[in-house]
Each structure stands twice: as C-alpha cells, then as structure tokens.
Length: 509
Image (cartoon, rainbow, N blue to C red; front, side, top):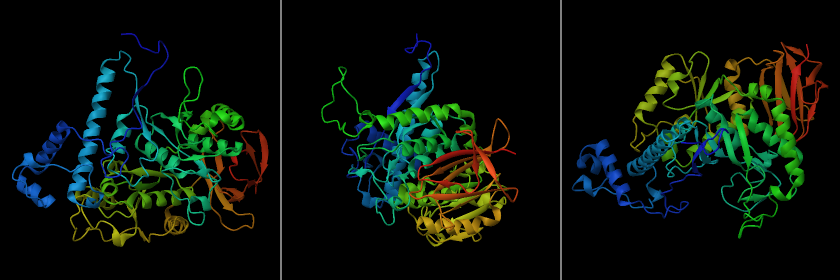
C-alpha cells in the first residue's frame, strides 16, 4: 500500500464537526435512530440493570420485558435530571466512543505508516450546556493522536447575528470587559493540554476571522496578533483559518457568505502571516510558556454536565476567574484525579449538583490524602447521584474553602483571597492595574524560564478593552528594565499595554 501523501506526513481526519444530537430542537436531532441502534440501547440497558424490574424502578415504567425498552426520540429535554435522560446520554456517548475507536483501529490497520488520527471537534463542545450530542470529550481527546477542533475568538466590535453567541450583554457579559471573546478557545486548549500534555493540537478551522454567527469588516491587526499569541501560548500546535469555499474555477459558491471574510481583508491576512512568522521565530520560547505543571485544578464532572444545564456555565465562569488571576490552571476528571499531587495541587470544584458515588469517593480519597479542596456553591453541590436520586449526605464535612457563586469578577476576588496562602511562587511578581493605579484584570500572563538564557520569561497579552499598567518585581525588588524578546528593545518597568498588546519579556540580569 502506498501512502496518498507520498513522503509527506499525513493524518487521518476521522470526522468533521461530529455531533449526534438527540434532544428535541437540537441540531439535526430529527435524524432517526436505526432499529439496530435501538437494539444496541436495549442491550446496554440490560447489561446495566439485569432485570426489567430494575429498569421499571429506575424509569418509573411498566415494561413487561427488556425487549420493550425504548426512548422516544428526539428525547424530551424535560427529562433532564432523571435516570432515563442520564442513561440515554451516557449510552449515546458510549456508542460514539465505540464508533470512533473502530474508525481509528480500522484506518491504522490499513495504513502501513500508522498515520495519526484527529477529529475536528466543534469548538463549543466543552462550554455548551448541551450533552445530548454523544461526545465524550475526555475519551475522544485521549483517543486522538492529534487532538483537534475548530475554536473561535470574536472581537467585541463585530456584528453578531447568528447562533452560539453568549455573553453579549454589554453591561455584564464578555463584551463589557474584553477586546475579544477568548475564554472558549483558551479553556478547550487548557483542558486538552491537562489531559494530554504531550500531544500536538491542530485547529483545522480556526474561527478568528469570522464564523456563520459573526462578521467584522475591518479586522484590527493587533486583535489578530493577540488572538494567535493567546492560542499558541495555550498549546495550539498547528492552525488553519476558516474560509468559505469556492468552486474549482474560483467562483463563489451559492449561498456562501463571502462578504467580510478573510479573503476580502488583506490587512488581517497580512497580520496573520506576520504573526505566524513571529511565533515560529520564537517557537521554543512560546512552547515554554505552556504550563508543564498546573497547580490550580478544576474538577470536570461529566455526570453533572449531562444532568445540569447550568453546570457548564458555572464551570466556565470559574475557569475565567482563575485565568484573570493568572494562576497555572488545569483540569482533572474522575478518572484522572488519582494522578494529582495532593501536596502541591489544589482542587477547585464548580457547583456540582449531580455526581456518581464513585466520582465522589475519588474526591474524598484525594482529600484524605492531604489534598485541599475549594468548593463553590457548597449548599447546592453533591445533592444527587448521576441518576437524579437524592443523596442524604455527601459525607464530606471539611473543605479548604467554600465560596459563594457569583459573577466572574467577584468569583475572581473570592478565589484570590482564598488561595492567597497557597498560591505557588512564580518567577516574577506582576501587578496589573488601570492607569489610575487601581487593581485591574484582563492581562493574560504566562511565566516560565527562558529555555535559551534560563532567565525569567513573561508573555503578556492584554485581552481587556482597556489600557493596563504593568509593574514587575523579581525576588521582591522592582525591576528597572527588561528586554522585549520580539523587538530586541529594552522596556522600562511600569509599561502600559494597549488593548490586544502582546509582549514577550525576559530579565536582562
């Protein structure tokens, strides 16, 4: 067998934006399940419950035998929080996991080069409240040799007119704080790099220049640069931007929205090319900015995500708050929590109403081994098991801290105070303020040691809509000057960052 790419490296794309929505009103959820699929579900239920009596008890049903078990599809979202909803969503994930595992095995079995596989996951898969889509994010991340997605950032002054847009309230949402919507991209990359730190990440449809839901007709150079730097400093390994297709003769495709896309914006395209050259020129330093050790760990519970439509929103807010504090944030799951270092790593648990007994037991084991746990919204956590049955008691009485659920900026303040005694020491002490000297947020900071000089290295990226002042200390002493690695110019302490300004600084001592 010869490889289609000749001597060039090749990867197999197993699926483009897979989704297996089954909820009423879901994206193409009207697609019916085959009779073989329903038979598979009955077998799945039979293996789990063993008897029809156990099924009837769980589903409040009156089946006479296991062959009668079925789900009315598309499934009614009013069932969310109960046993039938959980079982169906979990089965949907299991069958999709099995399908992609089969695809990988068969593709590589028939490829002499055993080329790596990737899946272009929809970028909002982690942050969406929907979990009827059949995508087990942790399993599929581990399955891929090259994790992939089509992630999105969007500038604040874009025209928004489509779907999947959240936080557009100019007073309370991301539009009130940031130059662009950066959280979805960073969170997906941090999640992937926490689970699979050594795998290359490939975004084969990057939506930084537009999407079906927004357009900007005069994209700013600095926005393009900032968004790309943010992606690669979070673990992006390879990237290809989204562009509406044309016919083989160059003609515009019917019904394609070409106005305002990348092909019509030479300034943005030039910024894209220049920024990639910049990133490649400093690739070793950029890679060093990606955390190898993550000390503040967010707990992701799939059971809660399936059953609670509010879970992912709270989960996302807590992530955003921690990123504003510029802490080395990572993620864990019930299957990964045993690998945490209880002496160093602190577990942050979002409001988690639903959790399986086994998952809860693993949190207890972490805690009993000396692990510190911060619980947000304790009064509404661990109330039910994954099937929706009320839990009399969580059996955990002591936490390192309990914090109320609040808006993002207040969560950041509460976390900052709670974690102050245990925050890991960083090479540099970086104070971010507004121009009046008041504490401010919005500069994403990565700290590492310069692999070339072994001096402290900073990547500063101002995603705020406002100018920010930066003051630096090293070993408790103010730093007079640093070197901007990109421009090779000296930088005075107390520098001001414009919105979307990016700096890579190193100590010159």
